[in-house]
Amino acid sequence: MDMYVKDIQAGICAVNGEPVVDKENAATALVNGNNLLGPVVANFCMNLAIRKAREAGIGWVVAHGSNHFGIAGYYAMKALKENMIGMSFTNTSPLVVPTRGKERTLGTNPLSVAAPGKDGDSFVLDTATSAVALGK
Image (cartoon, rainbow, N blue to C red; front, top):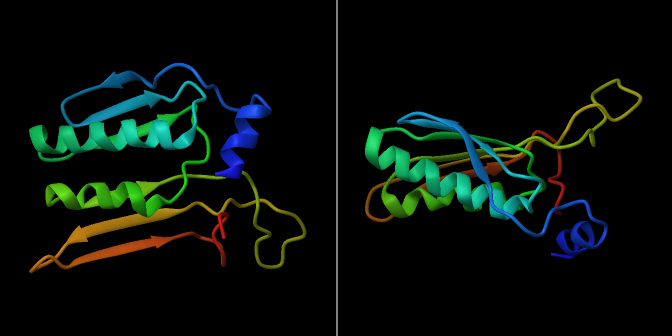
């Protein structure tokens, strides 16, 4: 939470406005996050993806102009409540030095997949491409 407060105080994130759909069709959308807090943009996008999946059988929404969105698994798990498979991915600034590298060139690039199982069980993968997630 502290990171979000600091981003707002430093003027890194916009505090007013809403995400805007730049382009869309029945199953997909491109969303401009208008530099809002990542969780605001991610919730907007996942809710839109779930709605599209209900109506078209699949929903795939991509955002730009966003910021750190928190726990990737939170958004993937939103689909579980609708008995759907949810996926959430994001990129980050270069924070990871690759094997045999000398400087940070890769992001942690979190990803999450959540799938409903039988009898109320589910599968949830929430990971990053780095050894440790940024928020740890």
